[in-house]
Every structure is written in structure tokens, then in C-alpha cells.
Amino acid sequence: MKMILTALLFLFSLTACSSNNPEEELKAQSQKLILEYSKILYEVKKEDYVKTPGDFTAYIPVIQDKAKPYLTKKEEPESLLKLNIGFVAAYLAYNDIFLTVENVKVTDFERDEASGAINISYTILLKDSLKSETKHQAGRVTLVPDDKTFKIDYYWDDVRTNQFKS
Image 1 (cartoon, one colour):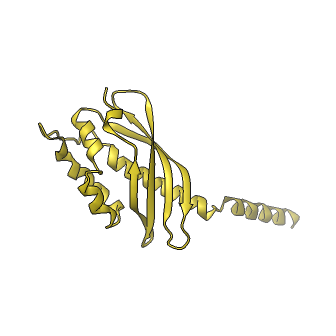
Image 2 (cartoon, rainbow, N blue to C red):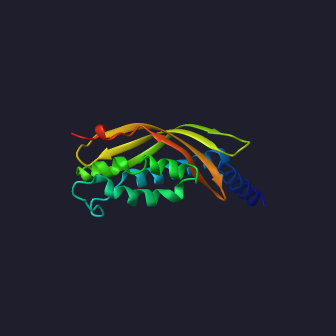
Image 3 (tube, rainbow, N blue to C red):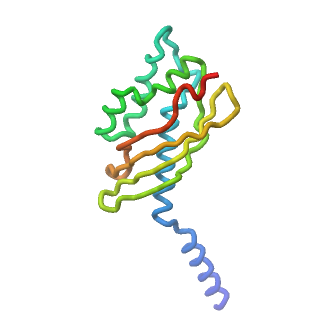
């Protein structure tokens, strides 16, 4: 009987220790969403890229279409009009430079309890196909609740084309 009680207490302690802190779980989900979105913005697969002679912007709509489901309606037209989405990856791919998103690291995480919005500062780790070095670029994003998930309401990063040209 003592052995069964000890085993039950041990299992209970394992379960209690393994249950995630909701804040940490939310942070992990947010980091995953930013990573997925960053891959859409910056990873153009060489085999999928079709170069249009004299026009690097021709591939931008392909990237934008993939990005739209991640954006709120407020952010979507604003980003698309400014060519904020897809510009860097399309320009670099046109010049035969292809990026890989290695990781995204959350550096600051603040949740607005009233609105449910999450303001995140992060570092994106990018590697280009020409160099072996990894670039660390700063970024910020605001995620807002949308049904059972989050969407991007504000997005900014410090990734520029001149950082990857040789």
C-alpha cells in the first residue's frame, strides 16, 4: 500500500511539474507564429523561383499571398501597399541570393490584459546562400487575438537588402 501511495505521489508530482505556465506557453506559440511568418517573408526556394527578366517585383505577389492569412485586415493593405512584404526576398532571389531563417528569439514579451494583444521584440537569425555567416536582425510585432489564434496587427524588422549583397 505504501508503495502504491508513493507511486501515485510521484506521478502527481510529475504531472504538476510538467504542466506549462500559460505565459510561457503563449510565448512559445507566439515565437512559432513569428518564425512561420518570417519564413514566408524571407525564404524563397530556388527551385520555386521564376525570374522575370528586368523585373524583380514580379515575385512579390507570390510572397504576399502566402503572408495574408497571418495579417489582420488593418495591417494587410498597409503592408502590401508599401511593398513591405516580399520586397527583400524577391530582390535578393532576383540577384541569386536565397535566405534561410534559422531561428527567431523573443527578447521582450508584454501582454495587454485588457485587449489580449501581445507586443513582442525579437531577433531573427538569417543566413544567406552566398555566405556562411548568420545575421541577427531586430524586429517587433504586435499580435492580436483572432478567434482561437493570433494575427499580426503590426510588424517591423530591420532586414534590408544591402546587408546580404556581396
